Length: 73
Image (cartoon, rainbow, N blue to C red; front, side, top):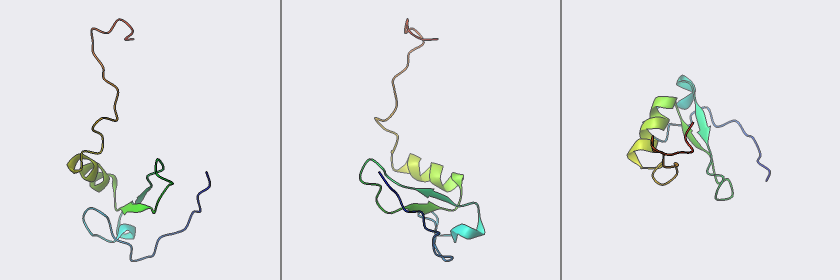
């Protein structure tokens, strides 16, 4: 799988809050389970984290863990 790296436009805005990403600490995210579509930009980790939480993007993507599991640590 090959991906081309391109610098986003200087006026690119955050997918969550709408702030200009380069006014902060920008993060680029791609969904590489579906051909690495277009990147989505967030101005910081707080916006990315809130976006993930509000859109339930972790539901079903984590392993189940139980402290009673005999294979645990």
